[in-house]
Length: 420
Image (tube, rainbow, N blue to C red):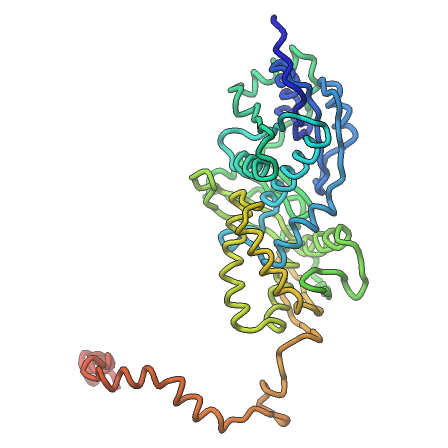
């Protein structure tokens, strides 16, 4: 077998699974020296040091394992929380947010190593290939992006044979019936029995949330404090972002809160049934949205809600590093200066309900809202306000009165005496 012409280094996003393990010798056969990059973004099951050893055993010339949990939260999770970003009104983007993080880390490592290319383990059917490649190209257009799994066309059995022929250690445990992806912001479950929307998700699909029917009978109350739109304390105790999200995941998840079952429109053109567990994300987002109702003006809230949809779409579609996303994030950051205060949430049997809010920057004024003693609202001013507010409609109707047909006449005529 002829040795391939040397092409330089490639940085491979490496998970330790079959696909990326086989990619190491495959890329080597193409003429690349493979540097692996394994990123910790809060995934539950991975033994990262074991993955590093496997990378060397598979033929990597260097293996990086980097803890990016805080960077992931600060750079991607908190901006999404500030934007209340949920794709199609439901999905809080837990997996989608990690893809620009992967791209950012790949380009960082490639520039550090002087690599000519980066590589990922996505197939040609998924949307992660789009997200990672678009983000990599945005960050450094001169570095090539490779997709071995998409290019080689192996079946899973052929991958196993290739691994054996190249002495590549591959997972030997029973394969999960689902395709799983998780990080600090949530867990994604798909494939297998879930591909039929008629099938109820089996109990073993869930790992972060209790069955609401089996959740504790006691209500759990949590107070979440925000500063500039970011949660910083639970029950008055300040803590780091990793610990805070972990506590919210466990607290809400134990109460059976945070399950999502949806059919979403994928970026690559087809619908897919997806099951998510995002107890901490959904709880923090609900608290954040409610706090905004007392700290932001009406017109700011209205405009922000419109841009929240666009933010979620761009994050989902791989446009995180686009100029529009940069501009929308600047808007979101500006609005969050006033989003300070504490929100009280109650969790019980699958429900998470906000039942209290307070803020020193609140624009809610009880003296204006009350119907009791202490009311300072000038009700006499309403007379002139109503005249001016309704003047355009009144003027129109005075001019076009013949078109103003009251449908009650037709209804009464049709019903006759039965209408009374």
